[in-house]
Structures are given as C-alpha cells and as structure tokens.
Image 1 (cartoon, rainbow, N blue to C red):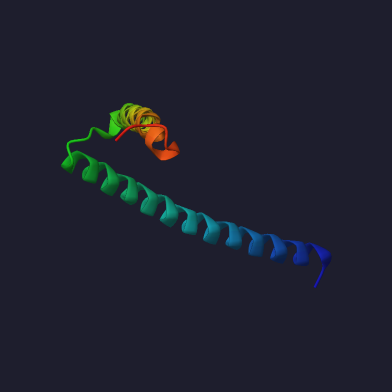
Image 2: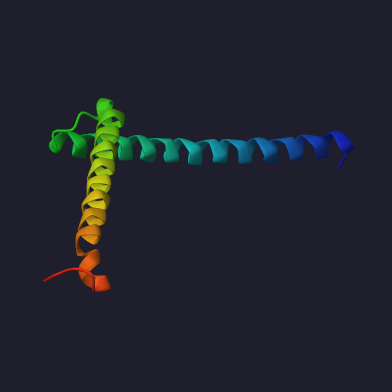
Length: 92
C-alpha cells in the first residue's frame, strides 16, 4: 500500500470518527433542548415565567437575606435581654 493510500485510509477513518462524534453531539443537543423545554414547562406550571427567572431568583435571594438579617438581629436582641440573668446580675 502506498503512502498516499495510507493517508487516504487514515483521513477516511478520521472523517468517520468526526461524523460519529457529530451524531452524538446532535443527540446531546436534542436531549438538552428537551430538558430545557421540560424545565420551562415546569416553571410555567408553577406560574413562573422562565424568561424572568433571573429576576425571580434575585427577589428570593433578597428575601432570604432579609430573613437571615432579621433573625440575626432578633437573636442578638434576645441574647442582650437574657445576658443579665445568665451572668447573675439580673433580677428575676
């Protein structure tokens, strides 16, 4: 077999691998698109607009942050109020 024949065989094998890889990638893309469609449908079922999901996530994070900050403040206040009784300097 000549060098040119060998090169042809090698490039045909490489082309076949590329075609196989492309088909696998197409399948992955189709699956990803289906997953995205399913998630968008699930969001809509829960009355959430998928196009506004970033804004909704930000609202939830802000609300979560506020709740945590309020809990910290309330806990610190409760600790201050009971401190005299814990240290024995308060009156029952």
